[in-house]
Length: 259
Ligand code: SF4
Image 1 (cartoon, rainbow, N blue to C red):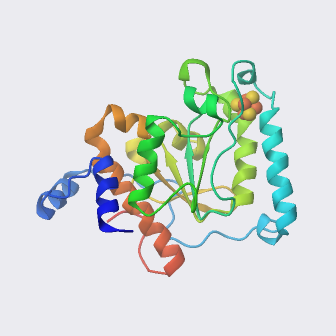
Image 2 (image 1 turned 45 degrees about the horizontal axis):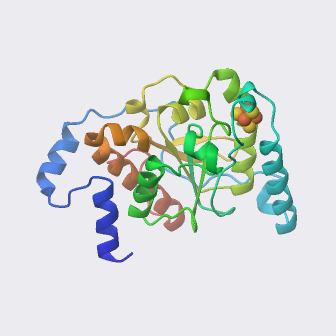
């Protein structure tokens, strides 16, 4: 990526490049170390292939399954959210992306346009992704735990998550991403089956699903818009996630926690 474009994206996510390295290191050292997650794995190993997974399917069959999934979501009545939504929002991005970003649920703008993360928070997410070389049009797929908007953007109810999760699991099986980035407390807690605060879930590699996919947690961009002081922590998370991906694709040895 051109240096000036990367600088622009870093500025958008609130990263000041003039911060002295020593001061940055001291601040990082002052942060408490995250507690090990029950599903943390050391070292990072590639996800296990699954028997009968999409990897072995033919392209036409996989495309057909995507279309079936899309129509199922658009016509879904599994939970009461279908009564208040404008449309179901499956996700966006290439269907063989190495990266999968998972948020909470569509907001008002996403509900209207049928695409996740398209409002102001979506613009910040795009800047965050661009800063580590990702783009929803080329190499990252973006989805939510819930495919329909909860009224008033309230938190998802457990029964809504339970009803909707099979769609996300199908997406993951079809995508077979190398890394999942869970953005926000709601997504992280629901995916990891924990009530632990987001601060304790950051900075480590979790594992998700049958494919044992590495999962890294960071803040939701809507939260970062309200709390810009935490953008620097989000930047640390993104760099950590990028290092996890590089380990998987380049075979570098490291442990499962951020250094
Ligand atoms: S949130 Fe999920 S389960 Fe509920 S109606 Fe929408 S697509 Fe169906």
